[in-house]
Image 1: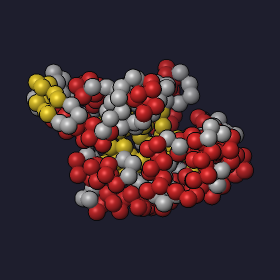
Image 2: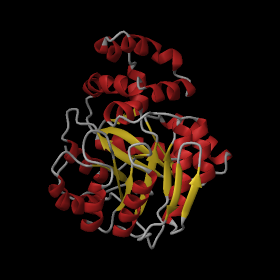
Image 3: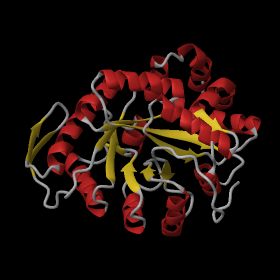
Image 4: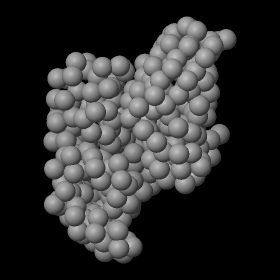
Length: 332
């Protein structure tokens, strides 16, 4: 869907981000990134799960395509120590001065404990302590910090960045949203509807937040709604059954709607869990339809308060790279 070579019109959004890495080798990104910037993307935001780490694709992108802003979405505060995280963040900021953003968050017990053999303890406080250390270290200060989850003594970066990068917090529920408003430069969310964004944005603003609201939005430019809904339900069940997302969705008011899905998941019946996801929920959380429909859907999120919509193309009936180009070049 959509040609990578064919230019087209594009309805202007304040910014338009794309999730990386794309499903090609990292060297193959070089030409693609130039074409994607030509098509209208302004930002690249990485993921960090079982693929590439959060920083490497962005370091390459920073060198290859200077028009693109780059952000980690997100780097875990558990899997790197505070000094290493500060060093890596400083390196990215050095590679892309004025174009780098550092997204951090608590991640989840799967990545932290099951994969990295690190105790997942006091995630809120770990984020708060890490944020305080990063603030000082990236500013070039000597860090002597005693917090509730870490002690850092005598850290001073040898190469602090010439332009201190903004720090964005991955925020699930009110406490983290208020921390982002109080101590960071923005927040990052995902798996929200446009109505959910309004609730989060209101809390963020009430807490004094005036920075970025970055939202990774699942997008599938496939007009076959039945195919998209059937394919995406297992993804919704898998993500929204992670304990942090369970509590988040309950906080958003979906406890009753998702109770059958969670019960099936707890019983180990993944098929029944996916089947219990309502079509209406898929339509709220996933932007799908024609590329023009997807642009209108993204515009709804921006109207609700998102300042940086970050497209994550779902490969259901569409090539994800062609889909990314199609969304960028479509008009509302």
